Amino acid sequence: MTTMISKPKRSKLTQRARITLAALSLAGFVGGWNVISRFDIATAQAEVEPTATPSPSPTASPTSWPTIIPLSDAPPIPTLLPTSTMFNTRLPASSLTEDTFVPPTIDIAPLPTLAPLPTLAPLPDIPTPPPAPPPAPASSSSSSRRSRGS
Amino acid sequence: MTTFSKSSPQSSGKAVLDVLFIALGVIVGGFIALTLVWLWLDYQAAGTQSYLAMLSSQLMAWLPAGAQSTLFDQAQVMGLPLTGETSAYWYMARSGGIVAYVLLWLSVVWGLVMSTKIVRWVAPPLVYGLHEFLAILSVVFMVLHSLVLLGDSYFDFTIFHLAIPFTAPYEPLWTGVGTIAFYLCLALTISFYVRKTIGQKVWRAMHYISFLAYALALGHGIMAGTDSDTAMMQFVYLFTGSTVLFLTYYRLFTLKTKSKTKARTPARTRL
Figure (cartoon, rainbow over the protein chains, first blue to last red):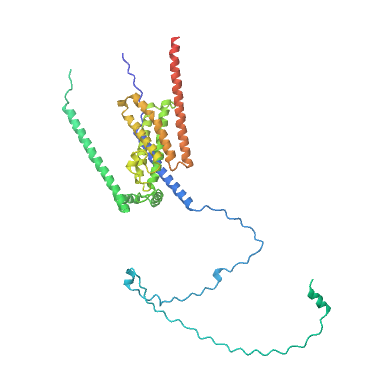
């Protein structure tokens, strides 16, 4: 009598397991791609941005400085009127294309001249000095001591 | 006794069918490959007006608006579309390299687990199948890691740089080390399919190359990897390297113990 010994069924790596492994690897690849690109962008941004330097801590000033008037309250600065006479002249088409640029003739309006300044009247003659006074009397002792010095 | 020296009409008919199927497969495969190449060239030339771009926009239209904007943002971050001077190829190469390395590590560790018999609760065919499949996946990602470098405009890699070690424009020594690691892994993966032809002894001897391949891949990753100076990758290299070192040492230790017990056994039987 012969006895049939059945071999235990051997479990192999199934097709589903293979697909799962491949899908996991692919997901790892795409995830890694995303993480690496993010990391690179963050590193590049950190290199571009200057490192934040610690600002000096504010200390109380011993004197109170006067504040400047805010600019918004200041009156507007008068602007010059645009002169249209200079740019109204049309450039000839040939002057733009040619190598040598020929400047156009510009008619500038004549500037108004100022009125002549009034001349001053001639200075009067210097009067003759008065006659010299008579000689003074003899000086005191205190004044002679002072003149010698110390 | 009958001998089947001549082929029967049934078997010759089957052979003809096989040839027909192979020819059909080659034609269909070639057509698909040529179509993909044409689509890729069209995408590179026309950009957003290409068929691939239009197809992707059609697919995007089916998604809700929120998902569309999220996907668009993610695509921009990842350097897509793959036209012009994009960094996407470089990111892909780095990511592909890391995935390939992790898969190679898993394959080596799983092989060591198999040989040291640390894990006994998993059926040996399952362990072997997983070891083999992880090695194949690793080679696939190695190929991806290399091929995407061809698209990178910064370093101008060519097939010549990728195929011949130490000729790459970027880190020629360590890139060359990576190329050698790839060839070794490819040879090991092919050896799974020719195991019966080459014999168990040769196959086993060949398998010791896997340690060298792993060491070369680790060296390539550390020295040529752009991300190897990050804390995360340093941890990955340290952890993976130390586990392989520990398991290799354990394997050598168990081999030594086995040989000692074998040497003692005949002496006892003599008594």
